[in-house]
Image 1 (cartoon, rainbow, N blue to C red):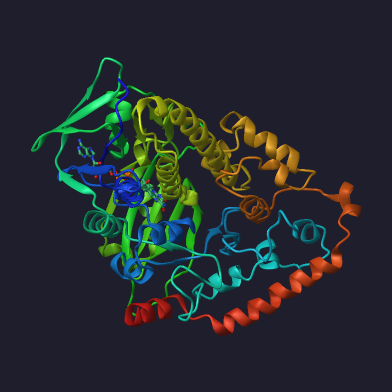
Image 2 (cartoon, protein in one colour):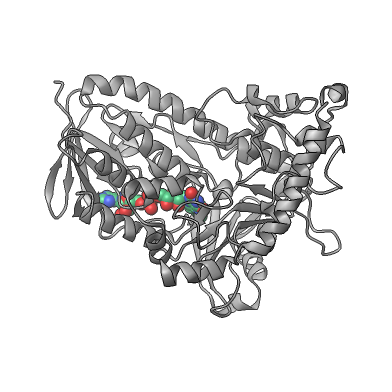
Length: 514
Ligand code: FAD
């Protein structure tokens, strides 16, 4: 049987489900585009994960494509601007109470694939002893000053600096639901899926729901979160754990109100290394979202709670915490027959680089771009998707592990993270080659590499990676141009600090004037 795909059923109404349904409906809701009916089924009883507040700059394009205005998004999701992650005390534990930090930024003065300033900084030819990030970008100073990435006169989704958002996950799914159902024609079914039925060839033919009975479809997207109802339970695709590489298995979350309506809003995620993991601190427009991601093999839940509350300070006394168990790893296949798993049902790694929503956007894009119209076409797409997302998740795991592996912290958790058997061979091989050689475009031969060369340089140099370029010293002959670029960064840093509004100030203005 090679029936035409006319109906897609997305199961699950978290960030993954609504982003995917909206994406598909936006592309296929007209007769000219081949009219596919998108139905989203979500349980009225099972809550969404409710966390996931940090995004990547790709979110701007996603929102624009879906037809959601930036002003609407910012106000309805209590969202704010994010320009970086600031990593505090990752390189080493605080010394005499003094913290260290580095930035992983979204903006660099130039694309290192065109001209790489790193060797000139590394060899001390430019930089006045500034950190790597301050040498090649004005954004570290902008973040330190709590400034926004754009001016009120900039158009929606455009900025003076590259930027993403911090958002309230629950409000974001509310906005997507409203937009997808009222503007894009997504059919919404509120019901619990009780059965997933397969045909003799192992394809899903329908799902059975408690209150509405059978829901038919020719293609199904599993967005049921950690339950993995379709790809895991019904289709039996095994889960490959990576808990021997990434050791954190729990998160404790606390929402913290601002002291008052004028409190400044950080324009970066703050990730602070702790004795058995790290804390996140994300500033929304109405509150902060904080949490401690930790390894229960290295600390007790009680101690973790204490660490997070100490981080927040006296304010934490009145606040409730929420414990989340995390299963890190991914399905051996993301796509099987007529089912594609997107979001937590497909994979999860700790949110150190806020990569999950980015990979949801990437999955939804790939699905709508390669959308198979019948079973025959599905086979070819299945192979491409599985290969592509295995690559993207493996690279994400390597990148996250790199932060731990390069740390000089000495607590047992950090020592265990440096045991070679916990480190992927691919990461070891890359680090080995970068000890004596610059990272170049030749290290990135896949256009869908999740983390670009810039990102590796921010983290490697921020963590104090031991790289010697001296045997190649004579090949860096463009010192004059490098110096010019550096001077431009310093000039722009000063200008931006005078021109850019504070994060909160800009959010208030946008809320007022749209
Ligand atoms: P969920 O939100 O769990 O949604 C699952 C849906 O399936 C729900 O609607 C539920 O009702 C439905 N469902 C389940 N069973 C049934 C059933 N039987 N019938 C019908 N419906 C059903 N990502 C980032 O990008 N940035 C971050 O900063 C970030 N931080 C995180 C912090 C933590 C501690 C954790 C755990 C995750 C974080 N993530 C982050 C990941 C991010 O939260 C998720 O990737 C994202 O929210 C997508 O979740 P989801 O939609 O796949 O699953």
